[in-house]
Image (tube, rainbow, N blue to C red):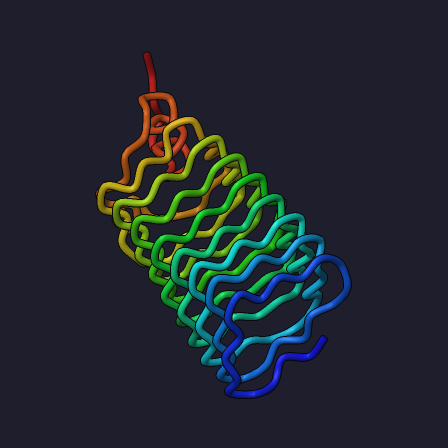
Length: 190
């Protein structure tokens, strides 16, 4: 199914098949199950109260979009790109996704649980007040952004590449703090 440019879809309910994104699309109160959005693009789109379950979002691109109260449940995100997007209330649970790019994304208050985001790039994103629980952030590159009150306790941070200044305000446990310091070249001794 291809979504029409600048069209609004209310109560969109799809199971299986493929969905092609488009420019200016609005989806309100949607539910997508086992739908492939592989390598599709959304530009200036607005998704509100949309739940995606077991969908393939590999290579998907959200550019200049608004994602309000969007839930991704067990969705594959490998190579997904989210750029200059507002994602307030985003919930991600059990999503695998190597090489994900978040660039200039507002993720304030997001909840990310049990995701595999190894080798992702997080550039100039606002993670204020977000919770990132039991998520693998190993080898992630962080450049700029805001992490005030973002709680990553329980998540894996080994190999995370960031300056300590870029992580100002981040909430982590003692072991994670030591991991971050070692990653910044600081010798942590007992």
